Image 1 (tube, helix red, strand yellow):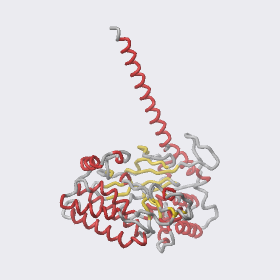
Image 2: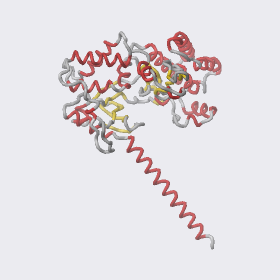
Image 3: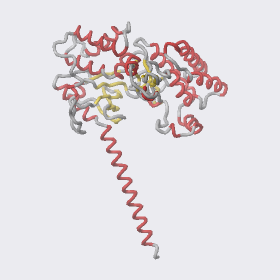
Image 4: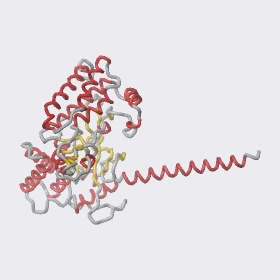
Length: 411
């Protein structure tokens, strides 16, 4: 009996500790959520500028006057880039919006920044449509390179600006589409529309834009959390991928779509693009396992990567990294970054595909597939020098996978 008071004290302490830990977790979760999820600030800023006549767009009236754009789940991973699932015009959508501070001001969580000072300052009043056309052409040339296809892309930009199809581009329309062009993902979505491997743009208001959401039956390419994958032993990771993932023929079809997308990035009409964060977290598929790249935030135009690397001082290769993993060598003698990336898109994608495709692969195919993927991961060197080998390796991989599934329902 003498030990009971001590046990009570111990249990009371454990209960107190559990309450404290639980409260701390709730606090951390709430703080993180309130910092990352600031959709109310986006709406406030965008609608304020719309009502002032500074911006316009196909979604403005529905969002700011009729309130028929429904904001649902917060998907943001960074405070400055707001991402929400939503619903508009009887469709699932993804809403994307930036939250920025005005220069020289300190951000407060629940007060609206004034982005018109930065984002919506061009073009200025009095700019003609022809001047805006030239301004847009110059921006695209600097961003994507001097390409013969640029006039067609300029035409797409002006057509999007004239959302009400009145054959004229107002100052508010021009300011809105100019702000959108500063967002690399929007520019890439516009450039890659019609290829079938990216989500469709549905509308915009200022620099806020909507893309198609997740269609019924679609899913992420991997159901395993991205943060968990590096922590798992290879054997366990392969077993889990096979257990929780789609059937192997379905994965093979998604992989073929990914390889076709890489070909578009390498030989597209609007220049070469680099994948600067290689993860399956951005890869989705439809209910019929057609590949979709859901997030282009880490895809960068080659011209932008070269501009970043040009003349950049370095001590080691890590200093020559654009995004997460677009890395160039460091010239130790000159202490400057070289201009060509160490690893091309295809080599990085093949490293992902080893874990995605080899588990559960047909026995007769596994050895050949493993050999092809190993060859693919060794691709390196300047894009111009490896282009022929790149095309050959990609073609062999696609043919190998497609031959295996062409006689199944997944073809």
